[in-house]
Image (cartoon, rainbow, N blue to C red):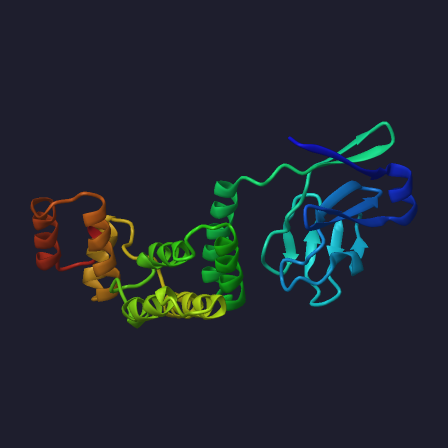
Length: 262
């Protein structure tokens, strides 16, 4: 860890907040009854300076621009979405030291991809584009966000694909076009991610978990969707056609619901 002496603890305690600059970064220091905290001075939502925010409960900082509430102790966003970037703090001999080692790019990439999945789940178009932009700044492949989205959607789309998947190829051509600006590239990826999120919204998980009794009950109830999901689950579980043949025969010959006989 690369520790840097940034200011005296007494000075920070007097003012409650301070902004220090290091390597082009603005870092907010906060002194409260809950401790001393350090984070980026930009709200993860739209970049409003958090030094203008309001502190409550010792470690909850509210951005006064859109009311995002950020937990300085663990980086969680209580109202909003994206996590807050924080820095380690060490107090020594009346001084405040910050751990300013460069973040691990692999860890940041995984965090951004996790943020993409959360954005898909919440149908949060803005977050999807923000996380994709972060991937670009990390010099990672922003198209990794599309791969993550397709993997996420795979078990949520009953028939395995939609127009969102088919149309992704055209948007990716726009993304790859040499003349496309960064904004156009991010917009192209945002169209893909938003469409996938919308198509998978409220969907179940396919395939379902295989359960023979539930499968037979689904057939008896003529619940085709549930029965097909169960069969897909059987294939994922490794059952072969030979395994399924006697079960299908039971389903065809049954005269009472499976739950009444098993």
